[in-house]
Image 1 (spheres, rainbow, N blue to C red):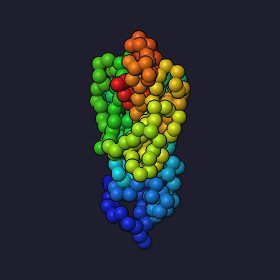
Image 2: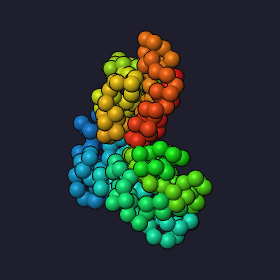
Image 3: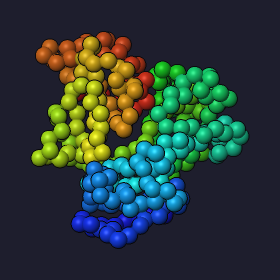
Image 4: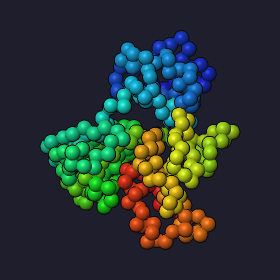
Length: 263
């Protein structure tokens, strides 16, 4: 169920909003998350307890506004099955974990045939433990996603799975440090050391062969995308050969994020 309050000035004055189910989402489509955090989150309860972002709920961007989702970081949004059409053995997978070892995936290693992904999350499946080989990224943006039969090149072949919380980022972006006058929904800065804010998603980039560490990307949270090398055909930019870029590509797909190719 959903509750949407479209006001922009003190829209829930004198109210208490009770979210008693993980599917009871509260939308404030015209108020940015930082404002919600400062002024309105204290009026929200999650199963009777005060709402605390990052503890018993999520507070995320929703285009130019916000959404409060009553789900703790321990929520497991992905359920995988060994058989087609959600049959056979199953396992519930959590966010940000690298499921890329036999110990992590257990009986589901190279044994996933179907899955259910909860709304508000993205996941990546890949053949190889480092994220290479055939792979596919799925986004459950507008509702739960159920895939009854995996693609032929992934069916019972996945040894890499990663789940990421989705952000409903608006179109307006900015190249460089976030400009408060522009107030963008996302930004990138040709590097990968910054982090997302409540109001703006940060898109990390591996600029060239040496800058900056891949670990900064692979450990990133609250980012859903990553950009590849910047203008590798330019001597003034990444200055990489095709062979060099291809050789480095596995270090980027290892993040499990949606990956933008060089341009």
